[in-house]
Length: 173
Image (tube, rainbow, N blue to C red; front, side):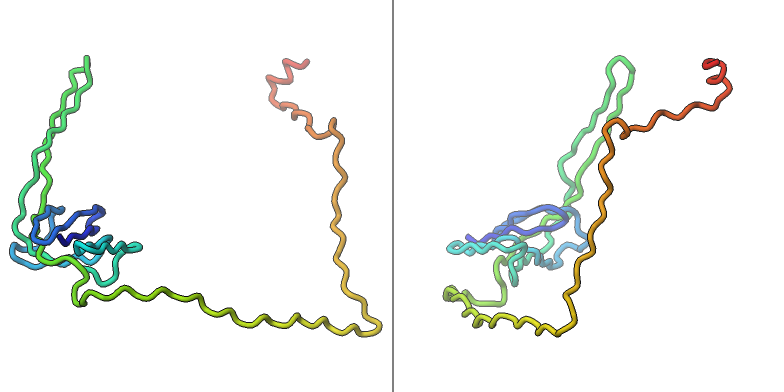
């Protein structure tokens, strides 16, 4: 049994060859062909191929069969003891697709690739030469970093600022 998992419209669908699936409404007429290319997983019944993120060359082909509405959903909101009641309904708009072909289309089954051998490492480079010292020149010295002395523990906090409002002056005096 051939099947594939593909992504469409932020959702993932399982498509079996010869089966039907329902996806969110597409703007295609009934009878038009459709092709999905964002295939996450493909199986031909014997071998499974998983993509990262997608399987290259894999496709799902189908035909639009109809545009049905989904099952009715009732949304009811109420707040007890407050006379608040709201009823709302909703039906999903769908497109039913008949799946015709699944797999890596346009290519024949390939034999498994032979295992790769690790590439040979390039020869090690000789150590870099040190520059010759010239008489009269001294190597540059790093500038010393100045650090301030730590403050005594009693002086780390500042005293709160005095208020200058007239009301505060009356309270002080």
